[in-house]
Image (cartoon, rainbow, N blue to C red; front, side, top):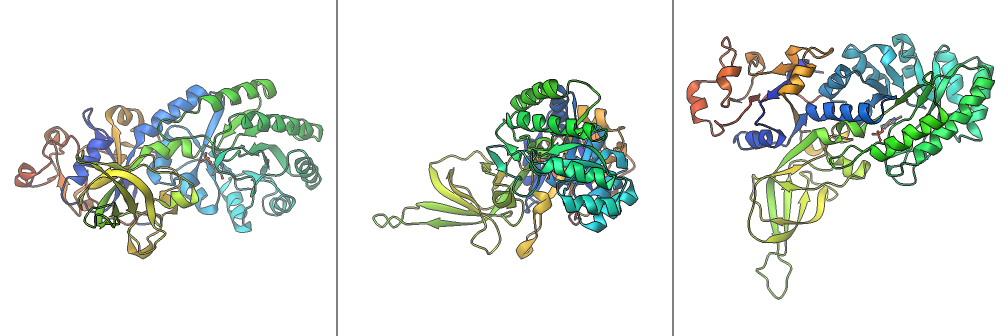
Length: 472
Ligand SMILES: *Cc1c(COP(=O)(O)O)cnc(C)c1O
């Protein structure tokens, strides 16, 4: 991994700037061609505040697979969130930012042997299982593990159902697994489930929590001392969605089934924390007019736009995560709406981002923005056909900076308020009106004549173009 913490530094915005002004500043700079993300860590902080308010008894363990961006992990760690890891390398990534192994749950019910050995060596003890052979494997490779039995309880409607792959039947299989674990002398500490990602059936949480209560009782009868209830993931996170209804169902079910505080309740939200924090900016590099009206051969009936990110990159979420995306032209256009389609950059016909949408005519070089691109996008993106995965520019407003700058594992060094180390600057820096206050006098950010000529002299923040490899 070539990227250091410094390469994902967080750019502190003053109160007049927001994600859209940052996107405008970067895209209008004249030096930006490739697609890029803006990650607003304030959005993650606000999500955490919502979680704390709505689900005060439920401790979040962020599902790393959803978006393993280093800054995301660091911000969540600073907020005190735990982590749900599914593999050796996710465990390493979280340990690598200084998180204690006790704040990790290894929540993959089917784990390769070497990954269990690694968890054991690293002190990651809490892990899920949903089948007999996994229990035998854990017995052999990590006999003192704290085992959580994952049951199946599916939402009737979910963006990504998981039940056909994971979770044992709560009434027939789970009791058997408890007996087997008892015979093996394993330490069963609790019950988990995952109702499905993008759950649209809040009452499913009540059904699942009731199943868990029955199994807690059985575990107690068998001599276990269960203390952990893990509600899994499934909570929506895009702008305009809410966890209110799910939280209400969960809180009521906890009151009914687990009224005392001695049971530790956790959840594994992924999408909830990151979906709305990432905004993707893409630019149009090619376009094609289609004329298909035989009675009017010169009339454009459809416009095809080709942008620099597609289904092999960030928009893999269309295929794997069944997401729908809404294109927002950055420039306010005028003129009549035309039926349009948006395509990714690769040479595969499958690489279509939006099939049919009404848009005003746009030129090459114009930008199309996609919001809510934080969940199940970047970690899955490939460089197929040689098109790079977009870089992430991280921003925060001043209040977020003040809140987080000293909260481990973040330090002041994670934030840039103008003092970009010269050695990391390979490209162009463009300064704004706050240049003077933010400038570190010891470092020459850019020649004055360039600043004077800068087309974005009114920009309210500083950013740099750091040409580094993406994080693998
Ligand atoms: C993917 C996953 C999650 C996160 O699910 P979201 O729907 O994104 O909240 C949580 N737990 C486990 C075990 C998962 O596999």
